[in-house]
Length: 545
Image (cartoon, rainbow, N blue to C red):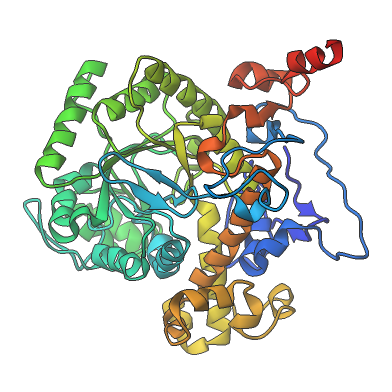
């Protein structure tokens, strides 16, 4: 694995054990740092470089690659040429500079959704942490110009929502989430609203279509990379557990049973798990899945929904092939393919550890299957890859591995960390806001206090955000949104630099030749040539010419 707990070069430390992404396996909202993503939320693009410039030299320690993962891929650089330069730029040293790399992208069928960079959030649904920090996530994503995903069950768990026979007359929490993003959205990005079994029964699609029209994309859901069952949340109040059971959810243990109530009163039981249902249970063949899927898409379009996407989890090859083929046939706007094994919610730990297809294997096969369809003349659905992405090099690798079909990288946990950090800082600097912000700190840790005692000193991108919204509006911007913008600015700059080094100056110019495999197992499994075999024949022709 690439990541140790401590990185002396960047001055970063993981509180817990680092995963493939570089994030801790357990990411805490009250964490005082300092993983690379956490630190980037304060320093922005300065976190790209070794610390203590002027008194240090630094060298990479990543000299071996063991096993198959995104970390066993390496990025190929070139010493000549330039591809994808914008119109009006020439191939000279004054124009072939990394700030001229255009990271904008778009996806979709009849309506194109433009994005300022190839990122989208993961699904932020009924987990309480998503609701608590939503303002930071939504405003930050709107500033950055990327899509945000409202996950499953948001209406179902909202005590204030009103649902009668699948007809929603009131949905304050869903409205809050959509409206907060739309308030700050400009020309880029979109709100994607997920549907699971319960959401479908509750009429979420019809409600969104009627109130928001084509401002939102409706996303069908076939699982996720963390687990192969429905979503879960944990609730600690008996009356809320009973409310969720009455809403039609599976609640474990059953709060309506007398013995369970007694156990809860005596504190033998302290919490309840709310579960969603499995979809697709009425189907027993792939053709039945196809018919059911096409019927669902046709129904959504009959309700005036113009943009539809699909999210699929880390199932096996049959489900992957169905997702790509059916989404292509149905002319969907986007297909997100989520590999094992992380999640932003309450996923069973050993299920995350043991279930499903790890991201790099799933994504490599997704490219292979998409390419098969393209060779048959199909216009393949636009893809997004998800599952363990956090840093700019991983973004590059995911985009190049899936090119030209992949338009976006979907990030869950990495985009949430700055929301937590910003809220903690704001809660200390403005104690009167602490409860509303979900701030977890009583004082600033030294790693933050050393930067300053006000937001404009702490966040490297403060004045860029102020330029975006104006000085008067800045008082309404949560620090979590500023932190998110700051962290993504580091990803933006880092991705530009990597692409410039590969002589690729626009998203369409990125391709699989920009990657090499760090070991032969990866080359065999992923279909990317081993380091010394990539371009070896062309090199020998130079020598023998």
